[in-house]
Length: 262
Ligand SMILES: [Zn+2]
Image (cartoon, rainbow, N blue to C red; front, side, top):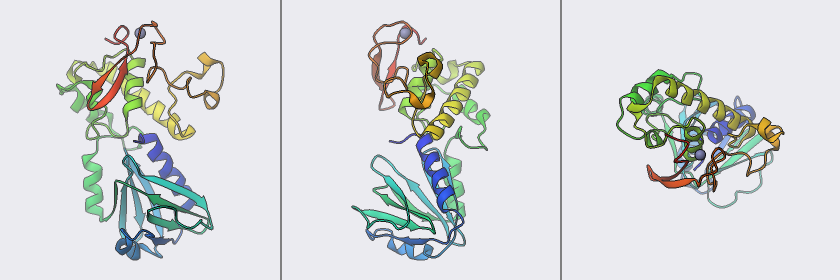
C-alpha cells in the first residue's frame, strides 16, 4: 500500500502536467464510462491529496475521488498515449500529458459535500498546508490505544504507513506499545515534526528515506536501498546491535528494538 508521500507526489505531478487543460476523459474498461462521459471535455481544475486519497476537481462537474488500495496504479506519460493496457478504469488526456489508472480500490465521482465529508473524516495530514497537529494531539493524548496503532489509524493522522511508523518510533526511542495517553506533548511534537520532514523528503525523492545521508557520507539521492531505512526489515538494531523484534500491531508487522525503544 503506498504511503502518503507517493500519493502527494502523484497529485503534484498530475497537477503540474494536466491542471488547466480541457481533458479527454474515458473508461476503456467501461466500469467508469457513465461518469467519464460527464467529465469528458471539461477543464481539470486541480488535484489535491489527503492521506492516501486523491481528488481531481473538474470544473462544473465535481470531483473524482481515487483511492489506490493495494493494486491501484497510475501510468502517466507524454502524449500520444499508448493503447490501454489491462483493465484501464480511467483515462485522462490533456494537451501534453495523459494518464491511465488501473485497479483502484475506489474511483468515484462526488460533489463538494461528499468531498468535504471525506476530508473531514480523515485525520490531519502532515503534508497539507492546512494540517493542525493540535487536533492529532487531542486524539492521541486521550487514547488508550498503542501509539503504533494510532499512527496507522487514518482518522487520527493520515498518510503515515507501515514503514514511516516503524522508522519514526525507532528514531525517537518510543516503544510502539506505549499508549497514546502516555506520550508527552514534547514527544508528540517531535514525532509530528519528524514525520512532516520525512514525508516531504519522500515526496521530493519519490521514495522513503529516513537515514541521515551524512552518516553514509553521500547525498540522499545516492543512498542505496539498504541504506535508506533505519530499522524496517533490518536484522539488527543500528544503535545497540541487538536483534530487531517483529510483531503484529494494528494488523501490520511492526519492527522495533526492545532495548532502545521504551
Ligand atoms: Zn537498539
